[in-house]
Image (cartoon, rainbow, N blue to C red; front, side, top):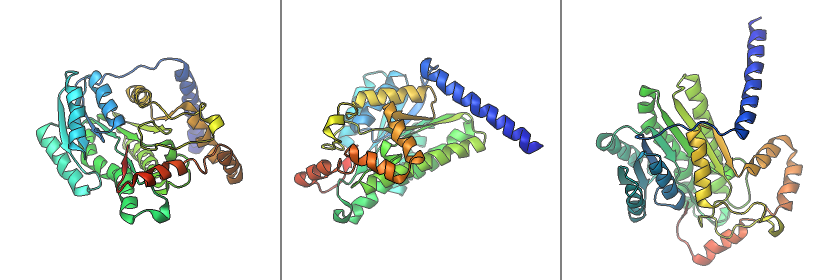
Length: 314
């Protein structure tokens, strides 16, 4: 009898969730106020990180900016301070677990408890698997995936004490479906998506309803990270690289609306669903038709021509 009751309640919740999502698609959701919140952004010296910093500053949040590039990070801080918020910068290598923990201790001692955590930093080796040095492959996984564990362990306890906070994971559409020749990046972003979803379930199981999570999965963003990546030419106007500002603004809407997940653009939900629903051969046929099997080859060629000795940052 209890099973039947739980089944009926689950179906009611399922129906309500679907209807609510449909309604929110057409109605503008209520956006929360984050004025005065302390927001930490990783990779804040890069294109997306800088734009996130400025958007959070416009909302009145005070900022803690982490990046391995001190000069770029200070430039972001300068722009954010012009918007009237407090900004604190730290030079941190996210591939170093102990460095993350030490920087987190400094933030708590010097600034306070972080209430919004934006895990934005990302790198890609830009090499084919058999041509890529092991240390570059490892660094992609350390920065894009492992760092999420250490960042969360460092800042989630204070959020749980207050039952208040928001954790944002900037993943990728390549964390929902894959493409050839970027095994390091796809593996790290699949890991990021899995980590984020499991963490969300854990917070719900612990009844930490005041701690929100948002997973952001954008298509290729025109930051130069994947310069040269091209799908079939007839389809490029349908799915062009995303404008960085547009990507960040759409992400901010989702964050402020406490939306659990957003794919940018919306068309990215289609391959995400077909990957699960269609046979492998059917997905492969579509993938090849769109040029997905070779889309990263020009990007890798560009990296080889530039003779890059390290990672390409987001």
